[in-house]
Amino acid sequence: MTYSSAVTYLYSLQKHGIKLGLSTMAELLARLGMPQNRYRTLHIAGTNGKGSTAAMTAAILQAAGYRVGLYTSPHLVEFRERIRVNGEMIAEFQVAELTEQLQTLCRSDLSPTFFEYTTAIAFQHFADSGIDVAVLEVGLGGRFDATNVVTPMACAVTTISLDHQEYLGNSLSSIAFEKAGIIKPGVPLVVGRLEDEAWRTIEQVARERQAPVFSLNRNFSTEGETVREFSYRGLGMSHDGLMCVLEGRHQLDNVACSLALLEAAAPQGITVTREAVRMGLGAVNWAGRLQVLDRRPTILLDGAHNPAAGTVLADYLRYSDRFRQHRPIVLVLGMMRDKNHRGFVEPLTGLVDEVVLTQADLSRAASPQELRASLDGLLPLPHIVPSLNDAMALAGQLATPQGLVCVSGSLMLVGECMAWFRGCGFSPLRG
Image (tube, rainbow, N blue to C red; front, side, top):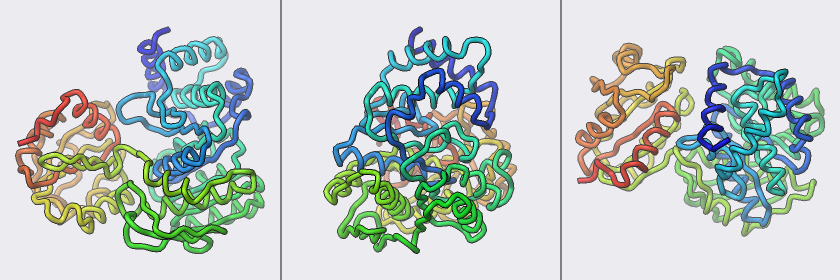
């Protein structure tokens, strides 16, 4: 099996959709020999912020000298982004070999989904690579997510807001219950910024499972206005004069969750020095989330796609010193059909000067015409440009070299935009 045929096969499994549950995953891992038991794990759930928190945690652990596996989803440009060891993507031949191995093990009596296959590949690759610690980002929810077969040193729930309601429920309480599914008996839990309704549910589950809970602004916190200079006050450690290279004030909460998670894991032998914290936060990479490309015009790529993330994006555009001199601001927007279009866009009202509606190359992507109908009255009269190439070209003209082009609404759209930039080798918007 080649890498190309392996990825084609894995993508073909997406037609089966999402099937939440752990029985298939447990059997698949049993046939592999339980690779997830050959290293320690940290497990991170949340509506927003879990990916950034996972990336920070992995970067700090690597700076501390550990061999670290990082499993995240979705990928932006290439499948291999999901599975990394010390920052290096899994090799193409390893994807091919592991996919073929899993096909053999599944035989005719086991039919894993795309995400189950991918998670099993990650777990086996981490075992083959001799990692010390795996940092695992939950894919969807928590209770029935394929990653929820591990007993971690510690776990975290970063935020809870309305998203994926068709799978997780229509209230903060029901979504919190699903995410609380990663809480294991006696395993420490780190909790980020939650609404009272979500907090009560998380706290109740943790109490039932006798899991110690450490909560943002109760047990740990950050002090400072920006990620460029802040302090951390934690469970036992304090750090002053910290800096994180990721953009946005919301990353202060994610840094706090990451550091508290590492502190919670410390009793199991995880040692992280002050210097490792500084080095890790100064080197962490998390593409497609408030990622700035210094071009003319400036390009901002942000995969935000739910109302809470839309608020974060609006906050960044409103308060970042980096963008106060940039005008006009042109929003290139594409969203999936099942997302809350108005809820995402409402925080951006009054912040953007021009809007270009486009779509990712996916069947579940909303057409620009559908977006225009659902967003009627919220934004300036939009331009309808179905082709991303043409949408970016028009956005560049509208922004002028002094402006800002913000591409948002979907990680898939941001991924296609990144691939487009890489394929060009230069920016057609320059000049």
